[in-house]
Length: 121
Image (tube, rainbow, N blue to C red):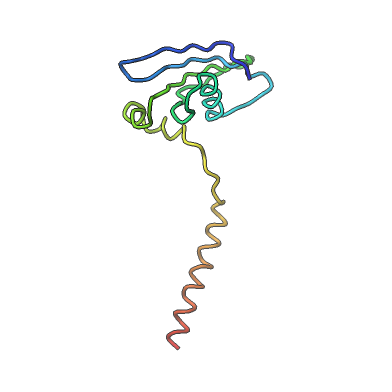
């Protein structure tokens, strides 16, 4: 994936670097985390300190514009960014489907009750 535009600005008041990018996204798709990783590689910084603020595109166009904030550490980011943006930038963890979790719970309860009943007899 190539960059059409890569612009970096320092914002000393809010203790961050603001990066605006236009990606050439022809025949490819990516998510926020992948975009932040690409930005980190280009700027040679830690990908954990890059926060995706906005990614947008328009119909019929092959470009995606994005705005990213780079903080020196995660504590500074927590002070300035809203909670939903912080949550949006956390990588998703694969979870077991809810149906399997429900099926396992009654089976475990039945096993726990069986030894208790044997002890009473």
